Image (cartoon, rainbow, N blue to C red; front, side, top):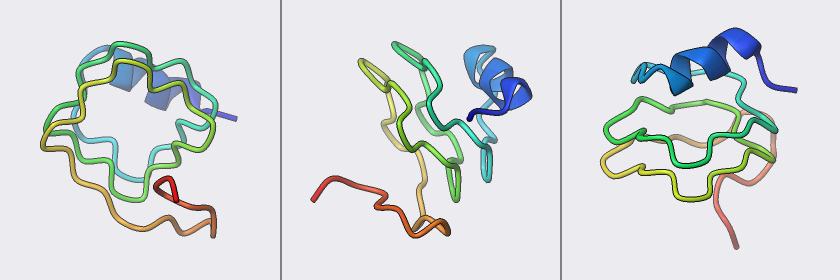
Length: 69
């Protein structure tokens, strides 16, 4: 489950979220444009309406898919 500190950082506009555990978090409508999301765990997070333009991602280390398909 998500780390509350990491979720609060995301909701406050923090852009350095690399390695954060955001699994299962409600991140709806956040502006994560340009954010560092490398190795962040987004599994099961609600990303409805999230702006991720220019955000950086890398492959998951958990073995779970990082993108649909």
